[in-house]
Structure formats: C-alpha cells, structure tokens
Length: 49
Image (tube, rainbow, N blue to C red; front, side):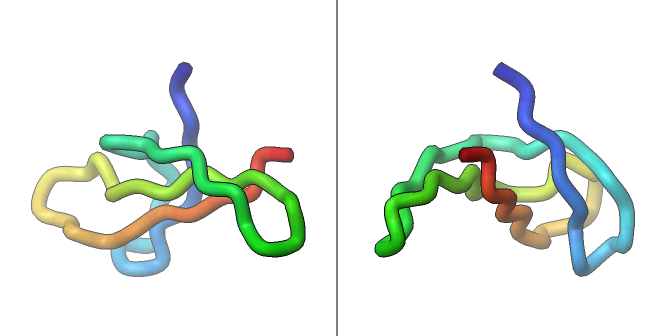
C-alpha cells in the first residue's frame, strides 16, 4: 500500500519510503517513514485512522 504525506524538510508531497504503522498512545494509527525524494532525509508522519 502506498502512503503519501507532506515532508516538512523539502516542502513537497511525496510517497513514504520504508513505511511503518505505529499505534499512538491515544489509540490512533499513523504511518511513519522517510521522504522518497532524492537527496532529502526528512521524515514523514501521517495519521491514517
């Protein structure tokens, strides 16, 4: 499944590279991973449920 989100470092929307589903303390689920844009090592985190 492809997840996309906004990278705060390079200021663009992109797909999440190496996505991980993480359950937060309030019970909601978020996708966390790295920006897929070349040369950017920013993190993308997005709540999915």
